[in-house]
Length: 137
Image (tube, rainbow, N blue to C red; front, side, top):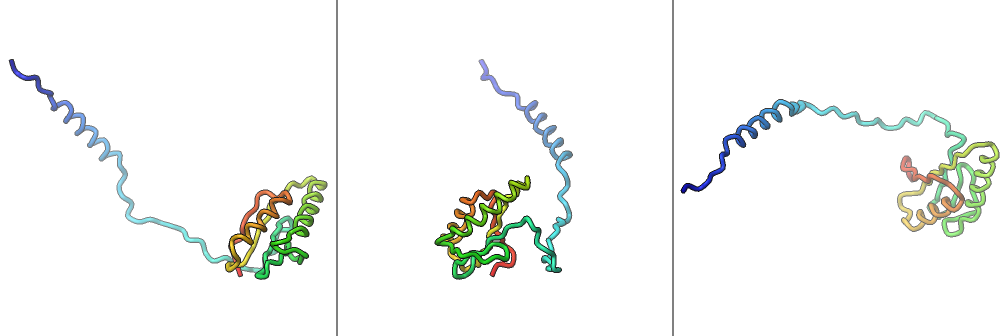
């Protein structure tokens, strides 16, 4: 009695058909890759939106809000929290619900100090909180 053998001819036929299908369907490799690189921002004296709140952390950890200088530091941010809460309360009364706050800090400031400022801004009820990365000192 002879041993049974597997007929591989149909399997090879199927594989060749699949190979031809994938060769036809596969797109040709592009000859070049176009990428658009953003240009440098132009400071043409554009005004800051009046709703935008920017908390500035100084090199000595002093805190400011937009153009105001506050009697607050990263270690004791009470005045900042109170001022932000006042702004958010006034906005709620005017039926505005904008609570976005940007935090701008110098590059050489340690992470812990910036984290304290982020926590203080979050305590005031701000959401979302973003870090500003352009024109860092």
